[in-house]
Image (tube, rainbow, N blue to C red; front, side, top):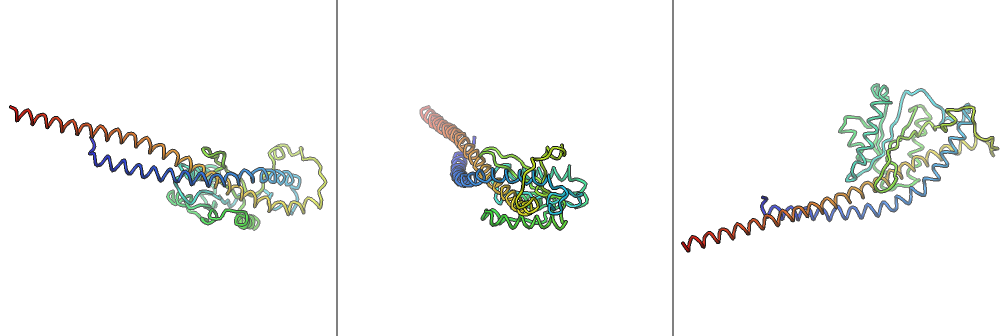
Length: 295
């Protein structure tokens, strides 16, 4: 049976940990509320804008203006892996890196073997995990989540578009957690560039969209629409990951708090049993001493 002092110290330690996890849960819940509101408001707009872009791009396969929709032979691929800067959020970061590693070992294995796949991490934890696996990371951005807004996300998207346009990369893929609710995050592997066409258009080329009249014209609209849509797409992915992070952290801290509560109950039971045993032993010693004196 454990020493009474050891059990008391452990109970005090677990209670202190419980206070910390409970406070972190409340902080994560407050941040989640704001992040959830932001992504819920953004998602319908981003989804519709991307749908319009895909539909419009499909009608302009031969246009020289539509440089961001042209499919090219894969000679170089960029993976944008979005994780968090801090831990204590369960398997949130591990799952993203696992998905990226799986992609490197399957679909992109030949290019990865030839060192033609570059990895860029948005978030410190992703870079740390890649380093532990011996996978080099080209660039790490840990500042984006300090002030996550469109004004900071737009230049990042412009840089990616420029890299694709000048041929530095033939495909750019986003890997991140999409927010569903506080307890559920959905892994997303999303093609950023080139712009993907609608599935029905790719599979059935003879079926085109209705013949709309465009003003000023398709080329002008596409030139204006593509950069805006891509900036929104990256910003939405960052918002999704940010909300998912706080949801995962809130859930992890809630689970940790419950586990601490259960552990405290077990330790209290152990302490009471040990104390009872110690009292019983002392009583037996006193009785034995009294009997010896009486004899």
